[in-house]
Every structure is written in C-alpha cells, then in structure tokens.
View 1 (cartoon, rainbow, N blue to C red):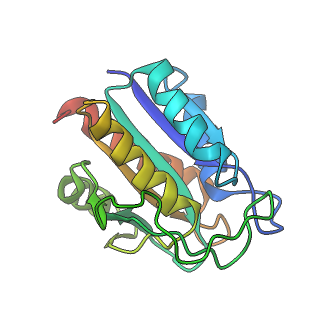
View 2: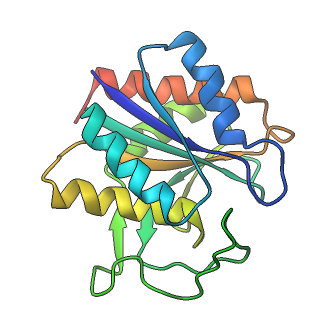
Length: 191
C-alpha cells in the first residue's frame, strides 16, 4: 500500500515544526513512505500537495500539522471552506474570512477511519482527541484542498488531517509512533 504523508515547515518565528520532526522520525523506520514537507505558504502549499498526489498516486493520504494549543494528538474530522489567518503565512499573505473554494461546500469530512484510530491510539496510551476545528490557517486550507481535489479527480482514498502537539508537550518519537500506528491500521484495513 502506497501512503503519502505530508507535514509543514516551521512558521511563526519557530525554528522547528512538530509535524516535520515527527515525519522525519517516521521515515527512519518507514523509508518506503512517500512524504513531503510543505511550505507555510497559502499559494505554494496547495499546489505542491496536488502535485504530490498526482506524482505518487497514493492509496491513502495523511496530512500532519502542529497545534500549539493542545497536548493531545488531534484527529481532525472536518475541513472548513474558510481561510481566516491570525498571522501571515511565510510570504506575508493574511487572508481574512474568505472561501478556499468560492461556491464550494461549507465543509468536507475526513475519510480516515477516525473511530478506529482514536480507539487504537488511546489503548496504546497516546493522548488523543477528535476535533471538528482545525483552525482557519494552512492546516485547514490543505485539509479542505486535498479532500476537494481527491473528489474532483475521482481518487477514492482515505485522507485526513492530524494535528500534533509541540515537541515540548509530546516527544517527537511518541508522535511518530502514533502516526506509524495510523499507517499500520490503514494497511490492515484500507477502506
């Protein structure tokens, strides 16, 4: 099974991004994974994500981001058709209350088996929660863009977004172990 995992480069003055750190740790033990570190750029990131999907033709897509406001691994259920940046992206752009896809649906939903993932990660001792609010920054933009793109291209694969706590709140190795388990679950039961 081919899996694409994305993460983000640092942003907001930080020198590291928990999602990129976890992805780098993950590929040490899973070098077969397709992976991309996306720029925190509201123009480039969606384009590079679409390109990665077309290039790798994955059987599943896991998108990672960091959330400074959580100490748990957040399984995002819902992507919203809205951008409302509290801080500018890497290029200084700061969209305020605009649609990602004008005229598109208000929201799209993760197609990952979130209940199974939540149950398994919880049983392994990971702090994990379900969330219907991925924010309105690039994490949400990438999540909504990916789900819409997969639908428009008739690519029916499991896809979803997972927010990781900052590495000071949850060690990178544990975050990577959790994502490895998500991958194992997808391989075991891909639909």
